[in-house]
Image (tube, rainbow, N blue to C red):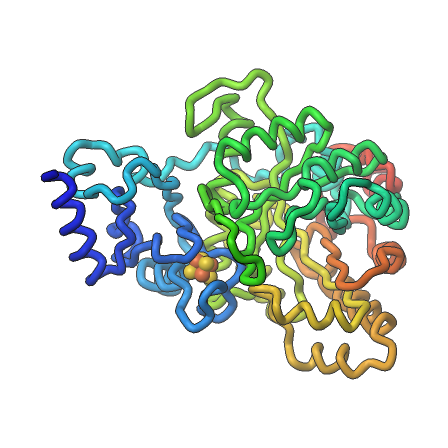
Length: 446
Ligand code: SF4
């Protein structure tokens, strides 16, 4: 009764002053006295990729909680942020004062120690069975694209799309529950891509996973030969009501869980040893256009420190803006630590163009929107735009490859765009000969 009264009083008081959400393991000291639980996704580290100019993805009339936290705690600094653990659900709606005194919140209040993963990690020897990792470390300029997991109980559509792109891409993402709509799970679609001879990237979202189901999915991927996982926060899609969104982790914590397991063979949050542990090549997403510009750099740094191997960025329509992001990433030494693949939009239908402004976090400059919107043949214009973007992006220092995202129905448009790109990264220091089926080794290796 005493404890309940204290908890009630604390929630009332801190609710009025800090918009406290009563997690019972207070981290206000680390977050500039802004409660991270007031983020609608309850992210303990952020922001997600859904904010562009400081607005919240879920409630655009409100400011992003995590942009405010970065501004309050770091101003313009690009320093590495702490990595806060996910909260212990058992402590919710209890008193954080009492939990602090009893030491109950010790593990969830203190920042996690980052793992010792070495320096210049893009030059370290290959660490997994991923062909994508081998290709990147061989100095190849890689190309990836994505296929949607089937929204039905057969693989017919996926197989014909896979046939259309086969032999032209180093790896293919199997998307997961796009817009929170049910489909075959990404690991199932990715396993089918592996069966078809493609290098697959499974996508996992914090929106749909507890930590337990995420680790289980890593095991599933390892056993089905899917060697790459892309860890995403997941959008909070307003069009799909009545689903419980999980957010047991944010994107950086998801990476940390997977990397900890890969390095230690132990599940971080249970201490349980897995034998053998999944050793997957780990990816994450970054939105380079989040403002202010130090925020995406800090978030990238955090994901790198958490153990990410490669990044696929949000789609890039604005090359000068992306150039600034890459210059900052390069100055901070991040392009030596992680392979960055720039997102290239391929818009080939009016419906596809209509979707883009509704995707959280996508920056579509008005001039590009006009060019595509006024085109007589949107498919031809969309391909021309994609080719221009791909050429310019592939010339930027530090860009290790491109990730093509199709906004249209026909995947056969992708291979001709990919074919025009150069095979090797400028200034790359290859270590191993490519084993990819898609093409020959870089000339510098022969
Ligand atoms: S934009 Fe994302 S991180 Fe920021 S408050 Fe909204 S949901 Fe949270």
